[in-house]
Length: 283
Image 1 (cartoon, one colour):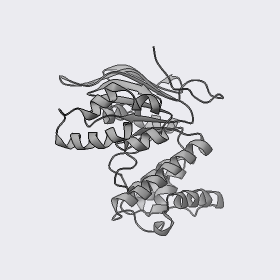
Image 2 (cartoon, rainbow, N blue to C red; image 1 turned 120 degrees about the vertical axis):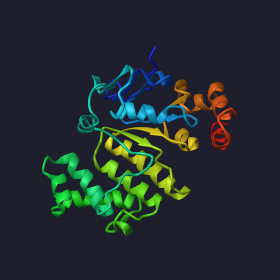
Image 3 (cartoon, helix red, strand yellow; image 1 turned 135 degrees about the vertical axis):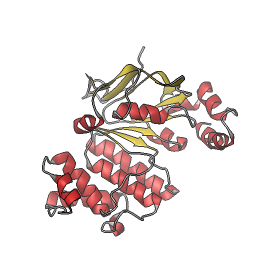
Image 4 (cartoon, rainbow, N blue to C red; image 1 turned 120 degrees about the horizontal axis):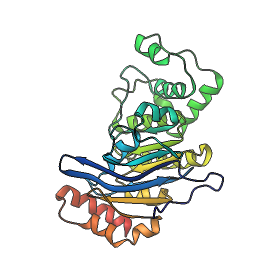
């Protein structure tokens, strides 16, 4: 039985769903019959030790990798064979573990570009590549961008080139850019990576407001298990490509299989350190 987290009363069914997804790389099974769903206007977590298959599943959901078996659905339509570009046009966006930025653009221009791509069919990319730049922002667009800059404390670096910024700042720019695209579903890959405690708290508040005000659906892959359990309505746990647990945060904290996965000592010293920190969050 496919156990789905409850969605909003006004919208039936998940916005994003995968069913029995299996991915093989040669003789290695990276994902083994994994299913999950993301309801409207909710934050859903995807956690697991290093090598659990989280990034592979993100690649399947976003269209960067086609599964050997199983299906991916967006608002009920099968998109398993749909390109990543087409999925983005449907309203499915994602971030990456390592932020991808344009060397010559400022913080404001990154956010502005994402907003315009999502709302316009003009030749924005051509203007950027040829150096013709952006047309001036109208009042509505400028206000939307200023709201994101302020929410993520980026106003002071709004007109600085993103290239050369510290990793934490670059991560915040990437998050603002992702939200500026007005997606229906946003896949966040390690949003707190490279951030200090204050920046992580800023991101958490922004994500909560995005769900509340914009009704966006979020799927988080995140190493900060405490953040996941605090933010998420529902959480899925992978280990060695298998879904070993799912449920509301209280159920995840008490799940013996989840605790065993994070406390296991056969994943190497680095994983052991991360596991110990994560176990404290689920205790």
